[in-house]
Image (cartoon, rainbow, N blue to C red; front, side):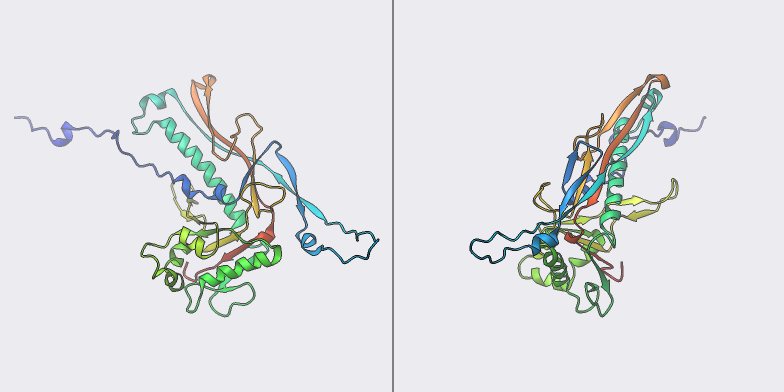
Length: 328
C-alpha cells in the first residue's frame, strides 16, 4: 500500500491575502513639518528681511522742547537667504512584477508608501540636525551631574532636580532677550517618558488627575501652546545589516514660532517649499509620480520629489536643552 499523504502533501504554502507585515511608521511620528510654519515659495532661492531686535527694543521716544524737530534714528536690518534643494527617491515595477506578485498589499501601494516614508525620514533627520543640536540657537543648555552654572541645569535623574523650573528658566532666556515667549516645545521620546515619572512633575498631578500624564498636560504646565514628542527612528546600517537608531534622544527644544507666516511676527524657524517645478507638491505632503516607460519593457517608474529648505530664522528665539539625563 502506498504511504498515506501527509498534511504537507495536501497543502502548499502561499502568501495570505488578509495579513502581512510592513513596518511603515505612522505619519504622525514625523514632526519636522509640524514645529515651524511652512512657506510655499515661487523661487528656488530668495531672502527674507530680519529687522534688528536690538534696535527695535532700544529705540524709544525722547522728551522734546516745543518747536523742535523730533530726534531721528533708524533701525537696521539684515537678510537671511534660503535655497530649496531637490530631494527624491525612486523605484519601478515591471508588468511581470505586477502579474506575479502574491502579496496582500498591491505592489504599487507598497512602493508609494516606501517612497513617501523615504522623503519623510530625510526631512526628519535633516530637521533634527539643523535644530536639535548645539550651536544652532543662542541658548545651549547642557544638563550636569552636579553644580550647574550659567545656562546649565541639573540632570533630571539627579536628586533635587526640578524639570518644571528648568524649562521655565530656559523660557525666560528667550523672553528676556527678545520680548517673546517660547510657545512650542519638542522633546525626545526617551526624555519625555522619564520626565512624566519625575517626582516633581507627578506631584503637580497627584491630586488633580489619575490619568497618565500626557504631552498636552506637560505643555500646560510649562506654559506652551504645544509640546511635541519626537519619536521617529531610522535604520543607520547598510542593506542586510540593520542598525535601528533614534533620530531624537535625550534632548529638548523650546522656541517661539509664528502661528502663520508673517512679515510682522518673528518665528524661530521656517520650512520653505518650492512648488514651481512641474510635478512638485503644492504643500507639505509627499507626492509620488507614476511614469510609464514603454521604451524599457513597459515598466512603470515611481518617483517622489520635493524641493525644500529648513531654516533657523531667529536663533535668539530658541533654547536647546541636551544631556537631560545621565542614563540615556
